[in-house]
Length: 85
Figure 1 (cartoon, rainbow, N blue to C red):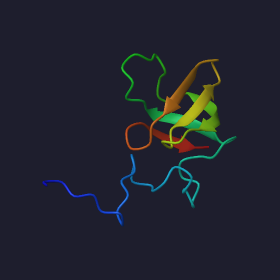
Figure 2 (figure 1 turned 45 degrees about the horizontal axis):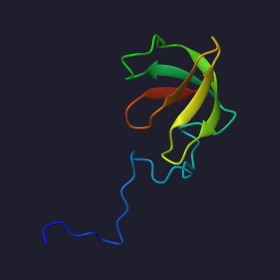
Figure 3 (figure 1 turned 180 degrees about the vertical axis):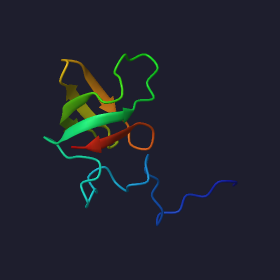
Figure 4 (figure 1 turned 60 degrees about the vertical axis):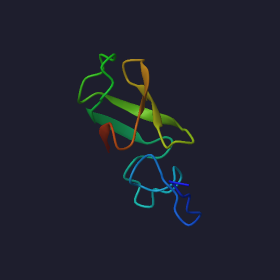
């Protein structure tokens, strides 16, 4: 028996609720300009301060960004940090 699923509880990959639920626009919607504060991906050379435009929000709430230097990299809520500019 062990683990029990509760239908009244839903776990999200971040603490902002479902991917499409961002009432204050803190995470940035499609078309928003963002600035990287911290990116946890150790394989990227994207530096803090890089700016870009959100082009897609996937089903997990990740913000896929086209960075001004031409790169593309998704920002992961709860792991990466960024600000909407």
